Image (spheres, rainbow over the protein chains, first blue to last red):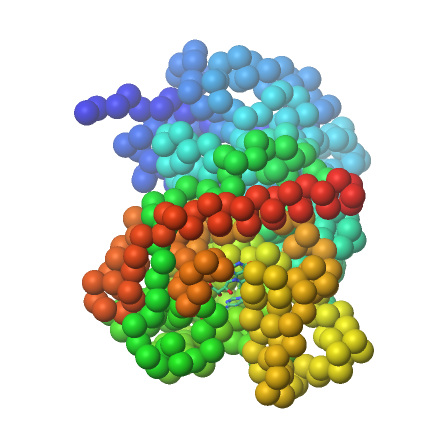
Length: 228
Length: 276
Ligand SMILES: Cc1cc2nc3c(=O)[nH]c(=O)nc-3n(C[C@H](O)[C@H](O)[C@H](O)COP(=O)(O)OP(=O)(O)OC[C@H]3O[C@@H](n4cnc5c(N)ncnc54)[C@H](O)[C@@H]3O)c2cc1C
Ligand code: SF4
Ligand code: SF4
Ligand code: SF4
């Protein structure tokens, strides 16, 4: 049986290209299931008027009306919006932007995509691996909502970082000392001291990986659908 | 809140009662029917995995992460450690040091969730989910804040950590075997020394595992096994076929497991209401 391929649009806003490279690397193994419309593979504007999924990478610069406009247009065009990577889903390292910085001193504030339009799934990671995207589509196309619940719930959150992990899980006494956060931090910002995580502040790039990988935190947000 | 019931036990294929056939396994201080140890022996013997990451009780309640590559090493780790073993941090080093390509991991539901999520959703380049072949989760009502609990045992009962030989969980008591005697502590009393995080935990059986293992009071000497996917089902059926475990249907104990699972969720809801 020949299934019609999912039409997937990729749009990149402010970011470092890491997420884009991940998507490109993931594509060869996804080609049978999805048709990816990505700026690297075409000249000119997007091919179709409607898409099944839009993958958005990079955060939204709130000082660029054009970007906010474009995001709203994508929301109209795509049935499902996936924020891919920490910048798009949680703000990530873009949260450090505060204006007055070269090359665009006028860019003062970046937000995750869900500050501008409703997002269906947020996949943190700085950047998430190609395998992550392949897995996402595997579960998405199988309609396995229970496996994807964490990403669905994350789509409703605007900020998750090591600081939130410490505040919500460690300082509330809910940490069980499993060490998952330490292992999941890409920058080594978390160390377990006396079986509890501590954070090296200046290393935390606000990627949110530790938070969604903490079994206590991810169970709690999946249950309640919001941060404690 | 999620509708209760839907997610109590997660998706599963089969529920069984199992017991190790090997006398040597049963002679050890296995936790219930020794089926977990037997499954792991089978997986190692047949080359389904090249190592098993599990926990060995070192002192009192504490366990440490160990890699077993043969039956003898597995036997040394049989039985329970009553604390969280900070697997995550050490396991990666272990897997890499020993260059294991396909491992089975025995862990608690929270850890199964971490490993399961990592295997299904490899966010990081450094993830090693592709090396994890089997996730075996033990049922769990909680782990102890063991410094606090040991202190309590010493002050209240005069029991010292170094003298504890074994700890067993019963329906109503936690049995602490020490110096040739058994101290039976009512569960209610013991459970007040659980980690706070465990008091809001809702997963009793380990929803992210391939096989979950626990016991029910009505079938002493047997391990309850829940298989969750084809991979878990094949492991259990293979172990039976090759004579490692005795296996019977366990659907009649499903009610007992559900009851415990429901208790755990109710406890979590009560505590969450208090904490937040
Ligand atoms: C903290 C804790 C709480 C539990 N609570 C319940 C409960 O409420 N209800 C219930 O039905 N069952 C519970 N169990 C599981 C139960 O006690 C048995 O482990 C299970 O029935 C398997 O028995 P078995 O004889 O087949 O295991 P065995 O053949 O003895 O094998 C057990 C395996 O688990 C490993 N292991 C033990 N402790 C740990 C640990 N902390 N972390 C990682 N690996 C470990 C051992 O190294 C061994 O490989 C709990 C276990 C633990 C550790
Ligand atoms: S502590 Fe590490 S994993 Fe957590 S948000 Fe910061 S950088 Fe990311
Ligand atoms: S992952 Fe969560 S529960 Fe585990 S040590 Fe880190 S904060 Fe604690
Ligand atoms: S009660 Fe939950 S958090 Fe605590 S050890 Fe068991 S599975 Fe982990």
